[in-house]
Amino acid sequence: MRRVVTFHYTLRDPSGRVLDTSAGGGPITYLEGAGQIIDGLDTRLRTTAAGAKLHVAVPAVEAYGERDPAQVQKVKRAVLPVDGELRVGEQFQAGEDRFAPVVTVVAIEGDDVTLDANHPLAGVDLAFEVEITAVRPATPEELAHGHAHGADGAGHCQ
Image (tube, rainbow, N blue to C red):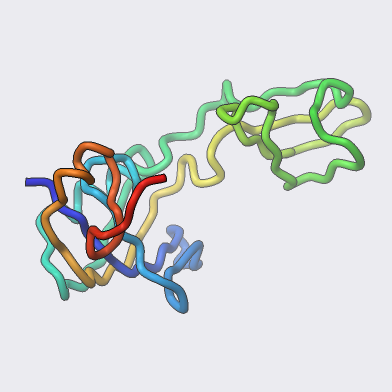
């Protein structure tokens, strides 16, 4: 039986720096096995019950993958789909297609721009502090649609 799980979290990198948190906002609700959260976290939450508080370590390979050096490329500034000045650290979508990768500018040398298409957390082992606030069986509609419709299952697709 697949479940819908609702939880609060704090995400930290290996040095303990907070990368993201749901504190001060609403919890996350997802359908197990639907790809709505990273695989390593999904797998580790499969047997948890509402009220559980746990620390979950997710290695990079089960999170955003290892860094791929082939995803770092030098291109000419003129071919980039961005107007105006570029700065190191800026991110943009590499094309007009909604599936085009998001890239990060990692270096600018004259007319050459080095772009990194790796996810910013690729190669990073992640640590989650999780509090499960609700668990329920997925509805037939959620299973058919492949995603959760909210903590109570009453949401609708558009």
